[in-house]
Amino acid sequence: MILAGILLVAVSGGVSAYLITHGHNPEAPPAKGVNEINYDPPTKDEQAAGDEQKQANADKQAIIDSNQGKSQTAIVSITDASYYPHSGDVVEIRGFVSNIYEDGGVCTATLTSGTNTVTQTSAAFKDATTTLCGTIDIPRNKFVTGGDWQATLSYSSATVSGKSASHAVSVK
Image (cartoon, rainbow, N blue to C red; front, side, top):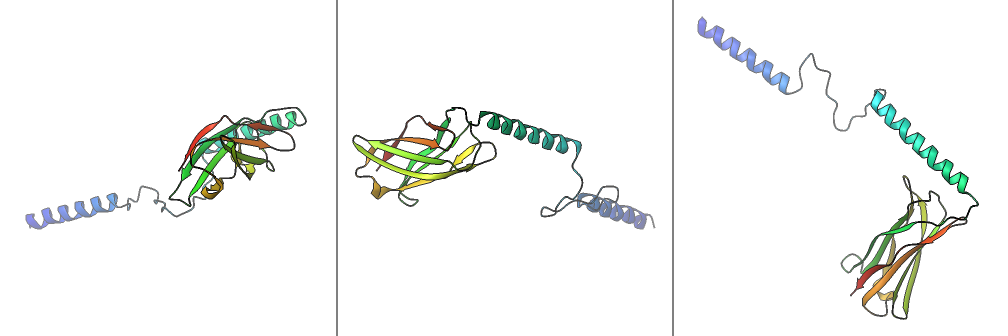
């Protein structure tokens, strides 16, 4: 009889432990699955973060609106300028404009080596907080020679233009 009582306590304790560790705790809220949508209203922290981002976007748009028609230089940066022989045999140029937030501009990659020049354009578009240049892929066969080339990225729109610093690219 004592053995049966000990066995009953051990089994019930094991079952309780299993249920608690596997999410079956009646005191805990049900766990949400990885692919479930949380329809709960935002927490105070989430609401504050959203309000803060909305204000930052409004402030940025106000600056853009106040600069319309004024002479301004676009701050253009190259984020990647590399030769990719195993990914399409292209020279890839990527970049963005940090102080402009608009659609409709054009980005132009210009690569030079001595008297040789290769140029290609892409459309620019609004990203989260900047103007992003579409990736520019220039086929290797556009380059008359391999070696060291200098890449620049320029941006122009109806209201602003600018050019990046030079970036070295080794074309094989």
